[in-house]
Image (tube, rainbow, N blue to C red; front, side, top):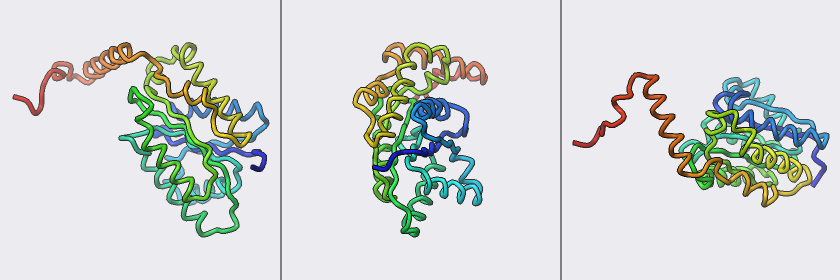
Length: 225
């Protein structure tokens, strides 16, 4: 594989260059920077709303040696803007034959407690890479992603391993290899043990219900008698 000099990070989260997608991408950028790889970040949600920005992004995809998607998984699939962008990239690469193959990888995350919730979306990414004539470099799956949003202090404990795995993956992808097995396992490991995560989710649900004035409705059964 040609040496990776330019990497393009596609931020697939709904908050653009803020939020969990941007946080994870930040540590990929750090890993690439250590290897003198020039990186560019693009918020997919903003690009798909503008024909001019879409064309500029497609041009950036053409020039990048490595493209990495960092995106949430919704209902076991990818977001609408990411799906739309994938379609545009496949169309362009199918019509412009002079575009040589590039490498593509994905970092997907879900609020579900297990990493397997990302499997269907990862399969979509792998299929996209094949259709767009990218060299597939594999991906990373992160469960319980809302823990990062709800508890920033947690980033200094368990999440530090996640960020280290991202930096290590940047090194592997730059060298033309898939992410290491240890990085894949670190990312897929739940951020919190299941009982602790369940309690945290329950507390969060009650807090949100109270804030929105519907705390007394939590015990209701809409379809029950």
